[in-house]
Image (cartoon, rainbow, N blue to C red; front, side, top):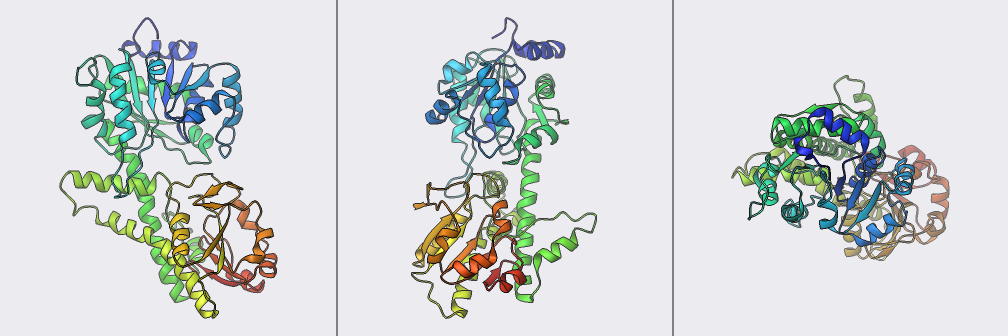
Length: 458
């Protein structure tokens, strides 16, 4: 900690403190977003501590093992800051927070089995900050939260029942919602604009100076924390709704004999059309959760009849795994084959292409439904070779295992799957059925290769 409280510094003093590395940053939650964030600070010579409850992750990081193999460029920064001793990880919240001038919260905000947002990680950390946070420190929430969570709950938790600290007087608090896309975090951290807000103008400017020093992007000042968080949710829920719209079109176009991908490609010629693509479902820690966060906000106000378009969109997107199963059942029926005891190969279990992440992946309900139908499951995903996921050991190689397969379903459009050898699939598989839920394969090419093909939206 510095002699002068960080909260009391003017803009010039903040810049000097950051450039001289005379302050300490603690990033709580060093996962997919938190670790690159911590490395971004440490890369500029700012002493940075990564705090996480995952002891194996902490031990791995301190041993010099970079955990995010699917996040390019940060591996180089990781090696640099570990060598320079500008970054280390710990599970000790007292040790890390008590030494820090800036505390960033990059904690998960998932949802429970009833689709209610789960802020337990933030609540737990907030309560502990009330004990360990030093006077003059600044807390910045990067986690995706409902509008009003900072103002209505988190501040009270940090102040604590004993009122050791008072917001604005003893500590600052604000938000800078993360906007990075997994697999492309370096690109997004250097190009995408970010939102900043504090609980008063002074704190907002302080947060602005911090992020302006570390991230070479446009920073947009927001009037308050809840508005900044509302913007974050709006952008993601916009996508969830539009994916649902395209999914419904895909279901219709299938029956009309229209190729959805051809429609979308042509539709992009119109200047104000923003393309979204159909698929087996919408997964990940953001879009599904963000929709339910807004629905939860409406519910907390007693307005459950609001946001009906979001409810409808969730219903559509959550039904897409069933449609993929229906495509498979239909082709088995028309081929006079029994699905029970058939062996089906799943291609891709990540919730999105080219990342190692299965949070809320649509692959899981598809696999579970197939198991219920008595189907034997094999999985190939280049990011999970030889690992055991969903109680199934992932195959190490694709083509060596096809001779036992009665069908194949593409669930995740990893780049590796865009160059599938269709002729080899057809000649190797026990029965050459191919279901494509991501529009990777052209129907004519698949049929020419001798595959019995069904494509979602085709």
